[in-house]
Length: 176
Image 1 (spheres, rainbow, N blue to C red):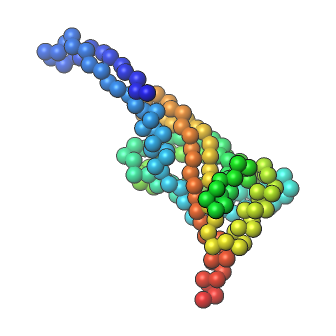
Image 2: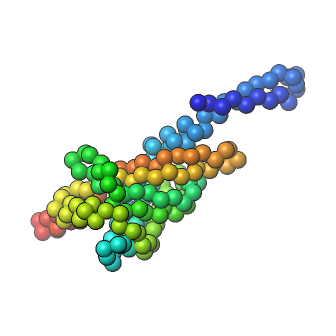
């Protein structure tokens, strides 16, 4: 719901006429996050154990928005998507760094982060899809704060689906 602020105009001839400025920033901020896309240029799961794995990610966030906000560092839950259905179970939690969005693309790098395994069955299902499917989809979900200049800080939900090629497609294409 927009918040209305009133103040007196200081323009000559209008010194006592109030005007309202409607701030719809929470809705605009969330729309900007929802409309942005995220794609992996590299995703590495390394040093797996029963409790954790080491994760390195190079990703590109794309937004057509003219705004260039900063998102606080936050955790996202990684969920496997199978046949269009997002699993309620979490594969792992990933610590996203603080992100200052650039227009139109922002590079996001996570280098050798130790991530706890939340559900080993989901890690196994993910690995199976990587090895046997042409395309894999995961959903990233989290909450963070968005800052844009002197405007009030806004809470936003981060929900992004990401699709990438599996090994089956990569191997079969290289043999062709």
